[in-house]
Image (cartoon, rainbow, N blue to C red; front, side, top):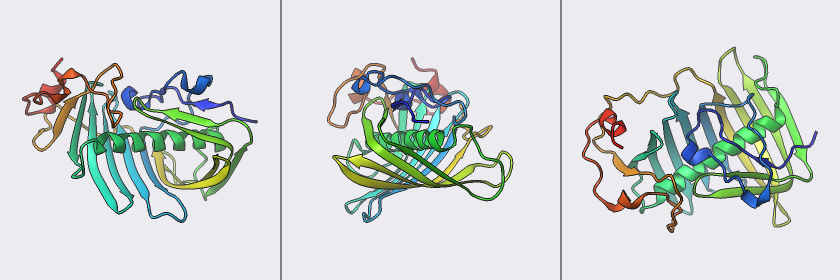
Length: 258
């Protein structure tokens, strides 16, 4: 059965600020996110045959919607690494990211878009959810007409038809992560382009613990806006983003800030 044009709605428990899509993107109808694939622990290693660039991300979401995202990006001789925390839908905390300003948001977008795309591909090849534990299950899906459209709060991506996804998914035992290797080929300006993905998806009981007692020394803190504002990097921050960061010592103190 052909998929409708896919624009993800909010995936259960994933942070609304980075994973909620643009509802009017290209005029596409919204398709509900599959309840069968709503992971809260997402490893994605993305590469492209013939190119040295790569993107490795790990998206972990707590039960309250807070998240930790680790990124390792390589492209054109640059290497960007760091960790991002999303807290209470109001704060973004970053550590690492020695490169120029704005790379944190670009890295967050890469992690969010790749995580969404992998969930879409899983929904296509295994609409019923996780396979039974056992040997690798070979998967394949082909779409001739409808594109994939996904978005974050600050950017979007479209993968044109015809597109295909092939590969394997393995679940070693009950409640274990679903590990995968997928090859995704789509049309870009009439030319076939292939992206390879490997990693794992899990619906863990406690994928990440960000307690109130966590010390914030060494973290850069800024407030996130609930309304879009333009900047060269697509960052969405409020008018206080250029003011001094809040003087807090623990995550609990930050959560208490309005």
